Image 1 (cartoon, rainbow over the protein chains, first blue to last red):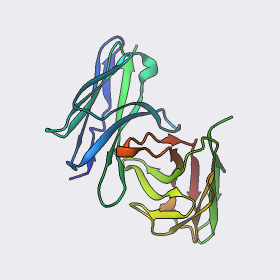
Image 2: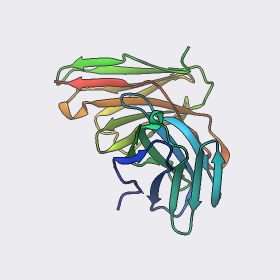
Image 3: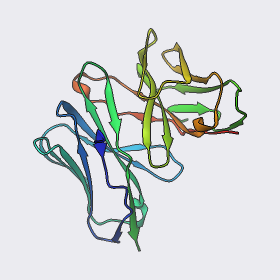
Image 4: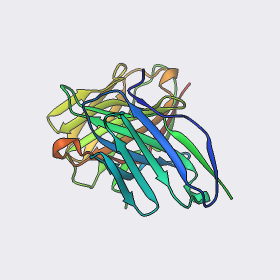
Length: 112
Length: 115
């Protein structure tokens, strides 16, 4: 089992719809969860992070965390073609050694 | 100016050659990282450094070495490049926060091709 798993996609949604991206993780000691966006050929950039169970909203983005189910998701409301990118989930765990693990990413395509 | 810079941005080299990738940052962060990205494998940590005197191996350090010359500079070396080191390499920094609240800030990447 991979430490951080994401469906590779592509996930295609029409413009204006809600895109739902999911991520599961294996380390129950994981403390912090991050969503990065990466355009093709570019570097990852942080969208948002979440530490506590529940929802966290930032503009059109909502991160949802369920530590009992080891599951974190990202919702993008009113999806735009400019949201088309790969979305990387990252998990930071406190353990004997430093762990900051990225998933392989989900490619999102927003269709105009 | 970019906060995290990488040089070179693109590099073609031959098997067996030694090359160095350089990273500089103006963010004032103590922590710096080197990752490689391969299609289907995501970002994998090569080395990380929490301060100038602290260097740690990551997930895939074999075949690589690093040098932290200053708080702002972190270099990655391939002592004898091989074709399966062909990848996109990213440097990243983070401020270091209690509780693992570690947003990472990435450089633009170096695309390396080993022939």
